[in-house]
Image (cartoon, one colour):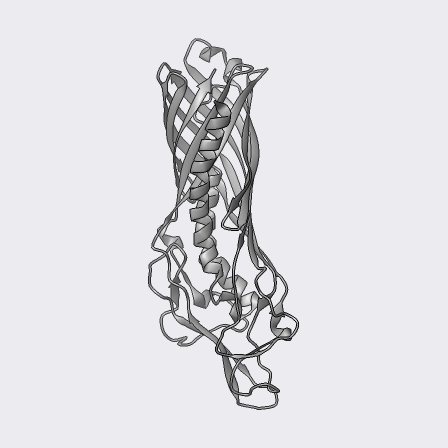
Length: 365
């Protein structure tokens, strides 16, 4: 039964994770990096961070739905989906706030704000990179030009989670999160994490006769994934690439790690549980690109009027972007309905990025 349940839950989780990853992947395959690696990384980080933050906030949720620990040998299996909400102030950013080395606004006196990935479905300001041709003073070539990309108009990111809890001696319980390496869109996704909950209400005599439980909780998890991407040379410019003729082995890699420490309280009565928690959480995300990335460049030996692609313009690997999504106080409140061994739970978390969580499970005390 448990094996079949686990397979079913994974089949539900993977499409939701693919949804999140595909929205991110689509933005990697833009002109960001044709503006140069450093500027491209800076622009991509500003653009994509709200989704990373929202996913990280949801990823660090759904750890508990009661403060009551299992008896030794008791266990539960739950599937939860946490929706991270992007706040309005993270739906646009100001390009003028960034110190790009090559990338420039075509009209610097015009509008400089642009949507993030969670913002409006309208193109941002036009950007370009212009370089002078060596040996030809005053002769400039526009290497690349593009609009800062439009947003998706979608400010909610789902983060599904499969978790098991197992009761241990000394009124404690471990939490296990695990998804084996799962193929998605010619890439893979895997997850593992764990936590521990220790009851402290047993040491408070005034609570011994009441259906109130208080526990301390700490948890850590890590999600890793790889998706293939395709960043190719423009087809309407000059080619002079001899060594790097194949750009088909590019991949976008992402790691999300998080930890959470909380004090949890619950009122556990037949059929219904109310619970709340207060604690501190932190999530860190790293992203990078593997493979050979072609960048337009200037070579007067080939052209003095058009950008070209040469071996010198190929970058082997894009160094990682590391984003500390958020760190700070988290407060959540929720409830659980118990129908025999089956449970339905929901809660809301107040933090930098708020999170709504709902899920189902089975529990054997």
